[in-house]
Length: 190
Image (cartoon, rainbow, N blue to C red; front, side, top):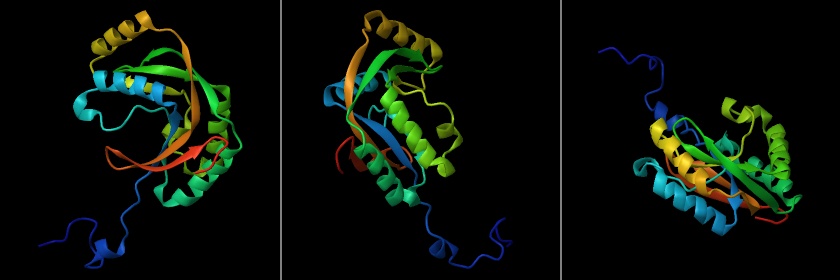
């Protein structure tokens, strides 16, 4: 029997000497509780149940290297401590093609994210290198017609509002669900 392609010359216990890759890290915004609960309720109601494995969130970075967790945490913490909690405006809704998201706006948060992007430049994925458009997705992976109907329904009663973001949350991606790793507060400590 011939060995599988790519295994020729590998030690018998290759899987024992090669460490498992460490899953990536995700950075999201920490919202005040009533705002989080508002988005979470909409997400639970409109996101396909079998696909909804994570809480409502606004992502700053989708995939930072897990093996660099200590340094990444220290960098985020250092920059977050220099800030005060920020007011974030929820300005409208966005059709995403197969879902709906609430659009967020905050100059101080965008500047914070840009400083982090500069610090993490060597590790950024193409998704994290593209322009940052902060949002909270409450529906995804549905038929476009379903998404357009929800967008119209939500826009009918939408009134712009603001909330306070007290910091950021660092998570480890586990192939679906996320594991909380750190809460890093603006103007505070871990």
